[in-house]
Amino acid sequence: MATIGKRSSPSHTHTRFVLNIKRVKLLINLDKQHSGDTKYRDILRAAVVLLHASLEDAIRNLIREALPAANEKLWEKITFLGDDGVNPQPAI
Image (cartoon, rainbow, N blue to C red):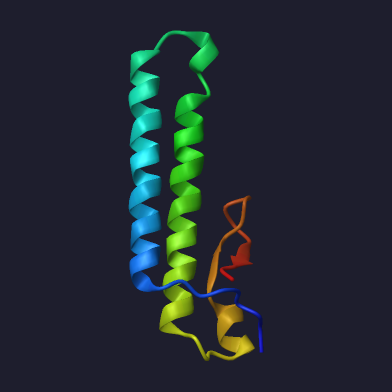
């Protein structure tokens, strides 16, 4: 059986996701305050990266809760697109 890592409770997953979304909003507001200033041009990129990571984290935690006793073959079928946008990567 595949090791799926530590499980989070649904309320913990939700709380963590909400906190991360607040962080994303703070980064977006910071970007708006400094638009045009080249020193701050990576802020929006950081917001997108954090949003993406937060979504993946929430999905993985929800999968862990929904399928706690799933066998390895089932886990291999649950994938996200790879960095190249084509090749699937394991969700867990």
